[in-house]
Image 1: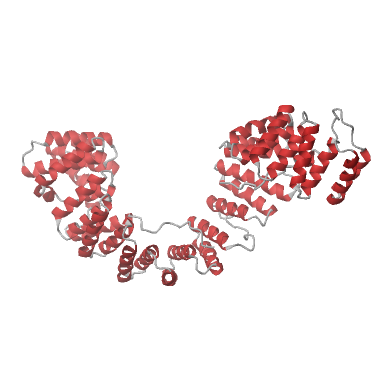
Image 2: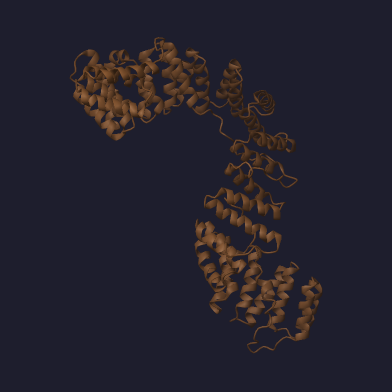
Length: 613
């Protein structure tokens, strides 16, 4: 994103032709030099009305003089008499149909009137008559850029640039077209050959274009400095200032982040845009200031209230956020506001109020899956497992395609020691999305006795999961691990071959799946394939150096191999990593908290809604 000029920098085709407005007559008598020169002098002095009167007097005796008609079109255009100017240029074309001048000036007039298609036609006609006409080449390229036909525009602008390398108009327009075509290196090569013009407004646009090129090249520091220079030249341009803020914040350079004051006065919408920009970069203090000013200008702005409350929350000003949201809810009670209020109250330790407001969000917008999850997660994280189970159960019915609703319900059921129900919920989540990390971790945490007790019920579902997703390592692992553990407990061992085959395929499909390496190593160890077990245990440890289970089982395997020194080393590592897992509830609470905290809340980082101005 870079700053774009609203109009071409120096679209002066008409003015440029004034100097050469007395072409070869092509059989027409030349205009009286005195009348033409006098009118031109008046135009240069800014006396356009007087110049027009002088031209009309001369045309009364010489109505078909092309240069006088051309000059009359230029003067009429300057006075804002667009219709008269167009008529004059069309007459020039009739008088000199094979000269580019009339077509160019008509095209420039049409361009300035926003009639780009007609302007392009006229510029093309000029090039038909004079294929190398510089003005027509630049004009057509600029016009095509205005209609976003940048590839075609660049072709004409490159011809103009090659005929007059260093020309500012051609170079600027070519650079802009190249940038739009995502060719910043080529654009930079052209722009570095230009010198900034004396006119401050034009120079500002030039520096803004240089900034856009630097930004596209990934040089945020250079982009910020160019935008800063452009803003110095055009201190009332909010668009340049906005670009400056964006790039300066993106540099993470403390000196560069020292921003000049914005142009004044700013509208509510402009303050809001700056607030969003500062909030997205984590500068909540500046964001708060701009959102506050938005609300001063538009006290009932919903978006400003929401984003100011969110900025307060991110800045740690919970009480200010709560008070603001309570006022906003009095005006406009929405699920979105209740949800944000609940999340702020949760952080402030007001858990009862948070639960109540999450419930209100659900009541106001029962079709929003996020609000159900937030309410269930609020109960879950504070270990209110009964209500959590009910909320997630309702969530699974309303949103049967949401795996996290099933995972949440399963965690609550697990905490209530409803292990069979938890297993069912986790498998449901996996069936919806076998790549869900939450469902995978939750399923893998189930104790072996659950898998054994539920084997007849879950075996067909796990087998079906593996068959439906034969290239999904986690789906294969879930079936293989359950198969292996059931075989171990039942002392049958007849499913070891299938389990081993599935696990070997799982680690081949996903070499970084630590759980699969650990399970495969355990299976090798169970089958007395100790050397292979060591290799797989070491790989599991390489992927997860803090795996207590892997260190402990590797120590056992080393002991079986009579490699006692290595076994002792692994046991020491296990001892350092071990934690007290005797309290199953404490372990479950930790898993629950990790699950909840890892989930995005219903609030976005920022809400880019325009305030209702």
